[in-house]
Image (cartoon, rainbow, N blue to C red; front, side, top):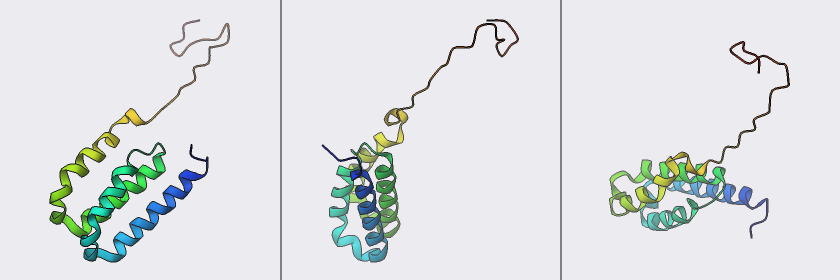
Length: 110
């Protein structure tokens, strides 16, 4: 089980990966498969900040390698596609009952 602060550590590690990818520029091509493997596990993370950093890492990787990512492009697409939907966001809403005798939005009494 992860500790509550672990997500912060994972975010910082992905920020470090993004910095490494941007610093190495085209030299990262030899290690692109390793970076893709890391991001493959990252997209399963439950915390949204980690997923945002993973997407930023992917953006840097694509900027520097472009078409050289073709051998792993399908894997990357299938890996990141589920994160483009709103199914991962858990939005809770609380509905409070109106007090007795108050008027609703349209002016009708409740």
